[in-house]
Length: 385
Image (cartoon, rainbow, N blue to C red):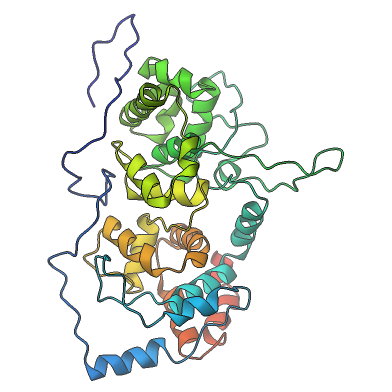
């Protein structure tokens, strides 16, 4: 993005209306306007032959995954054989089945048990401190290039939340902190094209330098860029953030997005996706992490692992993968499966060989024998995790 002549007078990007121009040509690398992805012309229509039906029955339908802790699993399994929704970009691809989703979730929860336990505890305390844009004011630092964090915080706790018991000093229950929607949106924008830990630090530094969104809105872009420069692409991200803040101020009188809590999912998607730089993954993260809606964000890790598992075609983009997977993954499984796939992708660099074996053995009736033995073997995958 270009900017006006630098000088003594602060230069603040003007508010912009909803975009109606062209969508991004390469949604894998950059997020652009929300689009309903149509079936890709290069994807062949899958034919249904007796041989394929036989293989499908052998591999996918010989048993039901055991997930006793999931009360909604019976309803999910009941629609396992139904085709994808008509508006899916791959309506003839009947994967993943609900059984596959729950099997993958259960296997990954065993492998990444400590990580998953923390996620469940943080989610159960009633707050929404998971995901980008967590609250906190970074500690002062004499050197502005140093990555400053709030006292007692780490990039992990900023990103994943700090588990609290929900009790005040006098023993009464406290209301959990609620993350503002705008914090979640800005935090997710800052997380684009960088690591989660670095984006958490960038958000903390931004909140330290500019405690309110109004102060970010009216500021000269240069000090705002300095605050978030550790996350990369600072000029582009700051310009987009200030355009959002100015638009909200012009339309609603203040920089606040709490009104999204009263909207349904489709209205939230339409409202957020009109801003440049807010694409399907960013919108989905706000829906799932902040608004606690059953949505399934598809980042690079989810996209690559799903492709390895055969849940999406090799030609699928991240956006078309989201359109397909968000319709196929059971609502009750979406949060768990998303966070576990992302963690697995980070730890094992998107290697899904063990996961594919764990899922197939569960569905083939092998239970917990083979993949659990590999999981618990000395020096095995569990040790690496």
